[in-house]
Image (cartoon, rainbow, N blue to C red; front, side, top):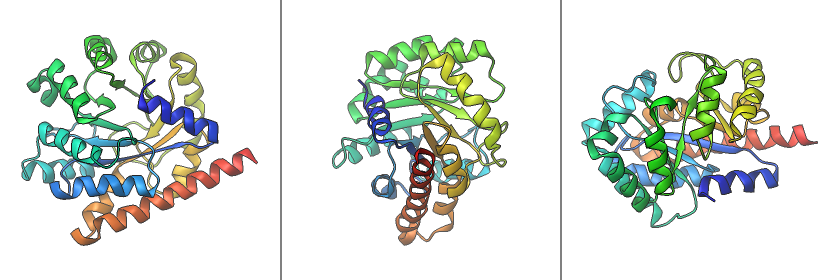
Length: 272
């Protein structure tokens, strides 16, 4: 059983939902990434998505694009990101880390070398935005050989056939993009999400996390009543962007803690 699967099973047994925050490695500064990871865990994160900086992040809105630009300007590469994960693992060997990024850096390193290095660093899953499932069989098989979960995106426009393809390859969880467009681009339609999640579950059998458009604790709480996990990124990056460097961890921790509490309260009400 993978570490990610174990988290979902443990949460389900406790009647809780997973909180999956996203940050970009190296933003606002490389030396703050590991402290931020620990801050997220302390604030209630169950799994963390760690963005690999990339020069042309096509699925990301302006906020996360700026985070990548700041990290790249400081020279942060895929190998640096793996080093950050390894440093995090020195004090936390429990919280799953999912690398989220694009194909170019992985293919530059070589898929087999990347998978091996990721496992050695302590990575648990990988989500590559521009690997569609019909072209990702080798990717998924390689990750599985190295005990890594391949995680895929589904969107409001995904067909039944695409859901089935993703269900055949994915493990860990599926990231449901709750709206059309890029990250942080619009308000989330909770009713539309509620209608879509059962369709995904029926064709995949993998936990479903919902992201894109989750801007505050109230929206996160509403999604937590529907999905297995809440993924939040742009709002956290905004907090990082707006905070003085000596207040970044404190401010991010306060934000994520509020989201965690709202999610737990909503799920508890739903079970009462």
